[in-house]
Every structure is written in C-alpha cells, then in structure tokens.
Length: 128
Image (cartoon, rainbow, N blue to C red):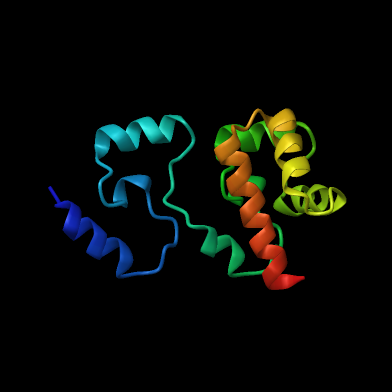
C-alpha cells in the first residue's frame, strides 16, 4: 500500500496521460470507486486539454464533463469538444450564459459547468 506522500511523488514525476483517479494523492480505493461511479474516473487536469489543438477530442475530454454528462451532450448533438466550443463562441464567451446553457442542456451542476467554461476560456486564450 502506497503512502499519500509516495503517491504524490509518483503522480507528479511523470506526464499526466490517462492516470486513474486512484493515483491521486489522498484518493484510496473506496473514494476512488465512489468518484468513478459519478464519472470522475481519470485524474485529468485542464492543462492536458489546453496544451494542444482541439482536433477531434471527445466532449468528455472537456474539464468538468465526465462520461454521464458526455453521453447527455452527445445525445443532443454535442458529441465533440469543438461542437461545445462552437456554442461557447455563439454565446460570446459569456460565463453566465454558457453555464446556464450547459446546466439546461446536460444537467451539469455549477461546479462542472464552471470547470467546462474555464477550460474553454483557457483554450480560447491559448489558440484564438
């Protein structure tokens, strides 16, 4: 069994990639299992999304959008991150309007919608 300090050193010693949520310091198998059932199965950071062009990234690659919200968005035609980015731009990057739209469209909570807004805002800052 790894200590929290050891898990932290291991986690930060290499690129993020697709690390499991259980790899995060302070997250054990019980909490990791609970997080996974809620759609938080990866230890992604916004940096991973913002660090590269949009391309054909899945909607669930957006910060705050896990598998459950990703499926809801995909069922409404928002299956790719660039389609959500399009809506973000149609709403003129307005935080309040985007968060309201995402909550109404997918059932996201305010934290998830805010994380997604920030992710797209950061991406636009980097690439537009």
